[in-house]
Length: 393
Image 1: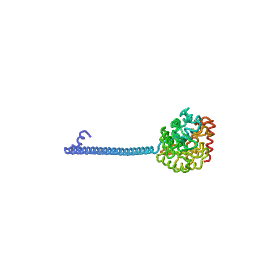
Image 2: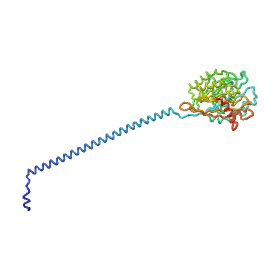
Image 3: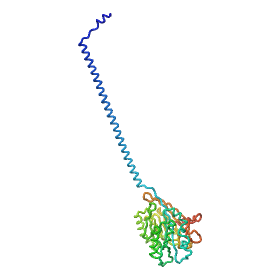
Image 4: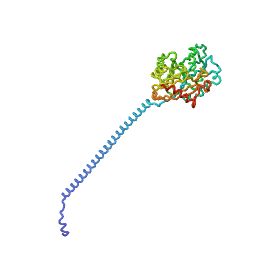
């Protein structure tokens, strides 16, 4: 085909055709524009929906977190409450050691030889002399209890009896210098110079800050945060007749909040190393009715120790600082110690005891009124005696 023939074969486009084609192109562009716009709108909608979904998702997570945080807070509060409750109901245990010693007669009988009397030793050596060999023991405990067997008075109206003991009020310094905090007065020498001598003794001990108790007078002491109730009972004249009053006194100190109850009995037979039936019955009754420790004195010699229902009964502690005899034939004695533990207001059921064998004198041939711990074979000998007297329980 030649050039002229090609030009003749191309059909010319009319104006109308050109206008139609232009309209179609515009329509296509419009459709594309609409499609693009719709796509953009759809994309925008999708973006908005996505954003909303994300917001809801994180908002829901935050709510859950808050809830969990709230639960954690509630749990923390609950745990704190439990800890506070535990603190209120579970306290740290408190342990106190109580020492008990026997008959202390701080004075003499007016018919004794004054040159060998306790009074003479007081005048020569002073108040601190008497307990200087046991003071470290009593200072290390939390409470020391003795039986104050005699009067501290200036009364002269002596009762009609074989032995009557008295000393001046200043003899309370023997106890305070020796770190003794409490004294039983329920015994057969507390009224040796009449009722006034008993009242004077109470006044002297009170003035010295020494807790005293006995008969219908009970005491409750605060010992390192533990309330200790003290009951003193005199059995000699009444026998089992003293039981009712003893039980009432135990209940009285319990009502005053006593967590530990100690009953001190003046009972038994002199120079007997084994308790009477009355002693055993009264001791058991005391424990059955709330006593945690029973202490005994009057025989002037040692007796055994019984463990009854988990509680200790020391039937006789013997003499201790005893101005009633310048040379007793039996000088063996002891300091009985028990450590009590209280937790959550209740007494822990244990039995922690210590026996310290002693002599009433630091001299073997006479009484110099200076109770002294024994050592070595002598200590073991006294332990053996106590074990022998206790073997029947």
